[in-house]
Image (cartoon, rainbow over the protein chains, first blue to last red):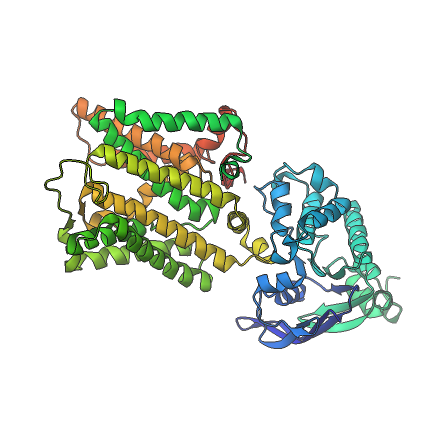
Length: 245
Length: 343
């Protein structure tokens, strides 16, 4: 087991963001965490990444307790994070952005090798090296954010709403890329509001509501579940037929 | 070492830099005494502007209280000299240490407890004001009556005690400005330089990338403070008198940051260009005013205000980025500005 989260409680002041959240991921799995806006998805990622400190609960990475470690140490253990909203550095070039990820201590020794891998996945990051990152399109910026994270040689990558604000065709490309990365052995924790696409992609998934896990199962199970269909897919279910047919 | 320094710098830029250096080295041979004092002022502002730029231009932390570090450096070295006869070359270490300690204290308080942006700037002002009021009442250092360095009987140039002619001060200041330029160039290409840029651009993204932002910001404050204090040491030995109301005053902090803002925040050349423009223009203005017999106190401040206004309106990235492009230098050399204006 690469990641195990047990009974995580997170508070922002008095407001509880996470209550008793437990999830786990096997090596090489693609796990999705779906839920509505404000359900606590980003909070969960930020807590695992060490940016927020939980009030209770534990986070284990490869069976060692990493709860409360500073974020830069967690990152250096191999937990990469692509934060919500494509957090690129707009007035630096694509190359400068990309290489920023490679400065992580764990990645320094294999810089050249990682670079080849990242270019193979995202050839555009090579072509556009001199361009200011802020002038790229939304889709390209997302690729840059992921490519930059990969330069740090993560073994577990957490993607926070990568499809946010992208055109539908780009979302498809993005999810294909995520699948490819996962097939190469990278463990992926995908947090999404795009429920259908991420449930189709994921081996297993969790549904987060009001800071608590309310459902879990394989992607296929959840996508067939009436409650999920009604709450997230806007599909009327057989149990409660609409009077208007 | 040399390839490390020149790596990636366009040849044209190197040639211009060489020509500029020769001109500066030769200046005392042709310059009048008055012009020399103006040039010393220019170099002083270029130096402290460069130091301030490390914090704001590189790491994105706005300090409006850099007079604190100038003052601490000035008072530390001056007090050691006046009271114990310790020369400035030893005193400067104490100066740097005290400024670094002050910077570390402010940085720790702010960064540990997540004070950022405007609130951080206010904190830096507050500490400079504490120092101003505190030193005003510290009689061992002369209090509000001022601390004076002995100026009598120096015939020749004594570099060891920094007693001498403006020409000597000019060359010392030039060496400091050149060293600061080289140091910043090296810092900007080092790992910590990249980390600073990341933090300046987006602290959240930097943290997500595994950068220890607390440590990086602390390094920026400490390095900037220590560098600034050396400017203070020279200030003390050049002017030979120190008054808390002057050295720690907020107008000093503002004056010090105008150069890099007008020259181009975050660029290597900006603080130098800005200092040249501002100081020479302001001095020319006051000379003209004097020549025509008009005495308007505060005219320099008004002039600074208009310069700032003009830059904010027409050159939001500062004078250097467009000037550098006009000179045919690419973005490579020292032009990693924050690009605030573009967004």
